[in-house]
Image (cartoon, rainbow, N blue to C red; front, side):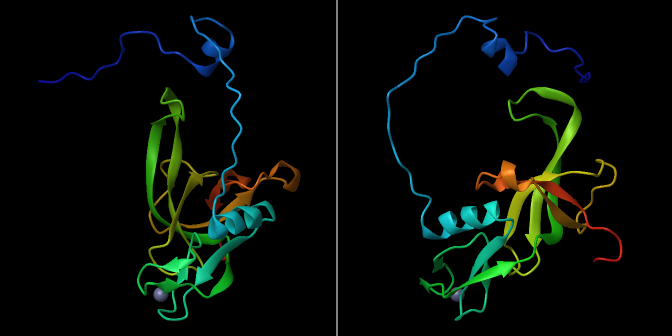
Length: 173
Ligand SMILES: [Zn+2]
Protein backbone atom coordinates (compact mmCIF):
# COMPACT_ATOMS: atom_id res chain seq x y z
CA UNK A 1 0.00 0.00 0.00
CA UNK A 2 1.41 3.35 -0.95
CA UNK A 3 0.13 6.61 0.41
CA UNK A 4 0.24 9.81 -1.53
CA UNK A 5 3.02 12.06 -0.24
CA UNK A 6 1.72 15.54 0.48
CA UNK A 7 4.56 16.99 2.52
CA UNK A 8 8.17 16.82 1.47
CA UNK A 9 11.06 16.75 3.91
CA UNK A 10 13.70 19.48 3.82
CA UNK A 11 13.57 23.08 2.69
CA UNK A 12 13.45 24.04 -0.94
CA UNK A 13 15.90 26.69 -2.07
CA UNK A 14 14.87 29.28 -4.61
CA UNK A 15 17.06 31.44 -6.82
CA UNK A 16 16.06 34.37 -4.57
CA UNK A 17 17.42 32.59 -1.46
CA UNK A 18 20.80 32.49 -3.17
CA UNK A 19 20.74 36.05 -4.51
CA UNK A 20 19.58 37.43 -1.13
CA UNK A 21 22.32 35.58 0.74
CA UNK A 22 20.01 33.40 2.87
CA UNK A 23 22.31 30.41 2.46
CA UNK A 24 26.06 30.10 2.82
CA UNK A 25 27.71 30.53 -0.51
CA UNK A 26 30.79 31.78 -2.22
CA UNK A 27 31.06 33.76 -5.39
CA UNK A 28 33.88 33.72 -7.85
CA UNK A 29 34.15 35.54 -11.15
CA UNK A 30 36.59 33.71 -13.41
CA UNK A 31 38.44 35.85 -15.91
CA UNK A 32 37.63 33.49 -18.75
CA UNK A 33 37.31 34.84 -22.26
CA UNK A 34 35.95 32.64 -24.96
CA UNK A 35 34.07 32.72 -28.22
CA UNK A 36 31.79 29.98 -29.36
CA UNK A 37 30.39 29.52 -32.83
CA UNK A 38 26.98 27.97 -33.25
CA UNK A 39 28.00 26.82 -36.73
CA UNK A 40 26.72 27.95 -40.12
CA UNK A 41 23.19 26.52 -40.00
CA UNK A 42 22.46 27.27 -36.33
CA UNK A 43 23.95 30.79 -36.54
CA UNK A 44 21.64 31.69 -39.44
CA UNK A 45 18.70 30.02 -37.64
CA UNK A 46 19.27 32.17 -34.52
CA UNK A 47 19.80 35.39 -36.52
CA UNK A 48 16.55 34.78 -38.43
CA UNK A 49 14.68 34.19 -35.15
CA UNK A 50 15.63 37.71 -34.09
CA UNK A 51 13.90 38.94 -37.27
CA UNK A 52 10.82 36.84 -36.48
CA UNK A 53 11.40 34.19 -39.13
CA UNK A 54 11.97 30.45 -39.07
CA UNK A 55 14.50 29.11 -41.55
CA UNK A 56 15.23 25.56 -42.66
CA UNK A 57 17.52 23.81 -45.18
CA UNK A 58 16.21 21.78 -48.11
CA UNK A 59 17.98 18.74 -49.55
CA UNK A 60 17.34 18.45 -53.30
CA UNK A 61 18.15 14.75 -53.28
CA UNK A 62 15.51 13.51 -50.82
CA UNK A 63 13.35 16.68 -51.16
CA UNK A 64 13.18 17.03 -47.39
CA UNK A 65 13.17 20.39 -45.61
CA UNK A 66 15.25 20.03 -42.47
CA UNK A 67 14.28 22.05 -39.41
CA UNK A 68 16.12 23.23 -37.38
CA UNK A 69 18.44 23.72 -40.39
CA UNK A 70 21.42 21.45 -40.93
CA UNK A 71 24.14 21.82 -43.55
CA UNK A 72 24.36 18.08 -44.06
CA UNK A 73 21.59 15.61 -44.92
CA UNK A 74 21.83 12.58 -42.65
CA UNK A 75 19.75 10.46 -45.05
CA UNK A 76 21.62 11.25 -48.29
CA UNK A 77 25.11 11.76 -46.79
CA UNK A 78 25.54 14.96 -48.80
CA UNK A 79 25.42 18.71 -48.15
CA UNK A 80 21.96 20.30 -48.11
CA UNK A 81 21.21 22.75 -50.96
CA UNK A 82 19.04 25.76 -50.19
CA UNK A 83 17.76 27.96 -47.39
CA UNK A 84 13.97 27.75 -47.04
CA UNK A 85 11.68 29.86 -44.87
CA UNK A 86 8.94 27.89 -43.14
CA UNK A 87 5.80 29.09 -41.33
CA UNK A 88 5.49 29.89 -37.62
CA UNK A 89 2.36 27.76 -37.43
CA UNK A 90 2.31 24.05 -36.75
CA UNK A 91 0.83 21.04 -35.01
CA UNK A 92 1.48 19.71 -31.50
CA UNK A 93 3.21 16.31 -31.83
CA UNK A 94 3.52 15.60 -28.14
CA UNK A 95 3.42 17.54 -24.89
CA UNK A 96 4.04 17.34 -21.19
CA UNK A 97 2.30 18.97 -18.22
CA UNK A 98 5.16 19.89 -15.90
CA UNK A 99 4.80 20.70 -12.21
CA UNK A 100 8.52 21.52 -12.00
CA UNK A 101 9.91 24.87 -13.06
CA UNK A 102 13.27 25.40 -14.74
CA UNK A 103 14.93 25.32 -11.26
CA UNK A 104 13.32 21.87 -10.71
CA UNK A 105 11.19 23.52 -8.01
CA UNK A 106 7.61 22.33 -7.47
CA UNK A 107 4.99 24.74 -8.86
CA UNK A 108 1.23 24.66 -8.31
CA UNK A 109 0.33 25.85 -11.82
CA UNK A 110 1.95 23.59 -14.40
CA UNK A 111 3.91 24.75 -17.40
CA UNK A 112 3.06 23.15 -20.73
CA UNK A 113 5.97 22.09 -22.94
CA UNK A 114 6.21 19.89 -25.99
CA UNK A 115 7.19 19.35 -29.58
CA UNK A 116 5.67 21.22 -32.53
CA UNK A 117 5.86 20.12 -36.18
CA UNK A 118 6.05 23.39 -38.11
CA UNK A 119 4.25 23.98 -41.40
CA UNK A 120 6.67 23.87 -44.31
CA UNK A 121 9.17 21.53 -42.65
CA UNK A 122 9.23 17.81 -43.47
CA UNK A 123 7.62 15.32 -41.07
CA UNK A 124 9.55 14.38 -37.91
CA UNK A 125 11.23 17.81 -37.72
CA UNK A 126 10.02 18.87 -34.31
CA UNK A 127 10.81 21.97 -32.32
CA UNK A 128 10.56 21.90 -28.54
CA UNK A 129 8.85 24.89 -26.92
CA UNK A 130 6.39 26.22 -24.35
CA UNK A 131 2.63 26.41 -24.91
CA UNK A 132 0.49 29.33 -23.72
CA UNK A 133 -3.05 30.73 -23.82
CA UNK A 134 -4.38 27.23 -23.16
CA UNK A 135 -4.95 25.09 -20.06
CA UNK A 136 -3.75 21.57 -19.32
CA UNK A 137 -7.34 20.47 -19.97
CA UNK A 138 -7.42 22.11 -23.39
CA UNK A 139 -4.04 21.08 -24.81
CA UNK A 140 -4.05 18.00 -27.05
CA UNK A 141 -1.89 16.23 -29.59
CA UNK A 142 -2.78 17.40 -33.09
CA UNK A 143 -3.78 20.89 -31.92
CA UNK A 144 -2.95 23.68 -34.39
CA UNK A 145 -0.73 26.39 -32.89
CA UNK A 146 1.06 29.60 -33.85
CA UNK A 147 4.20 31.23 -32.44
CA UNK A 148 3.74 34.25 -30.18
CA UNK A 149 6.85 36.35 -30.71
CA UNK A 150 8.45 38.67 -28.18
CA UNK A 151 8.46 42.37 -29.17
CA UNK A 152 11.29 43.08 -31.59
CA UNK A 153 13.37 45.05 -29.04
CA UNK A 154 13.35 42.10 -26.59
CA UNK A 155 14.60 39.51 -29.08
CA UNK A 156 18.11 38.19 -28.60
CA UNK A 157 18.63 35.62 -31.36
CA UNK A 158 17.39 32.78 -29.18
CA UNK A 159 14.60 30.20 -29.39
CA UNK A 160 13.06 32.20 -26.52
CA UNK A 161 12.47 35.06 -29.00
CA UNK A 162 9.27 33.06 -29.36
CA UNK A 163 7.42 33.41 -26.04
CA UNK A 164 5.31 30.31 -26.60
CA UNK A 165 2.97 28.67 -29.06
CA UNK A 166 -0.72 29.57 -28.70
CA UNK A 167 -3.79 27.97 -30.26
CA UNK A 168 -4.27 29.03 -33.88
CA UNK A 169 -7.50 31.07 -34.10
CA UNK A 170 -10.43 29.14 -35.57
CA UNK A 171 -10.80 29.49 -39.32
CA UNK A 172 -7.03 29.83 -39.87
CA UNK A 173 -6.25 26.11 -39.76
ZN1 LIG B 1 18.64 14.34 -48.37
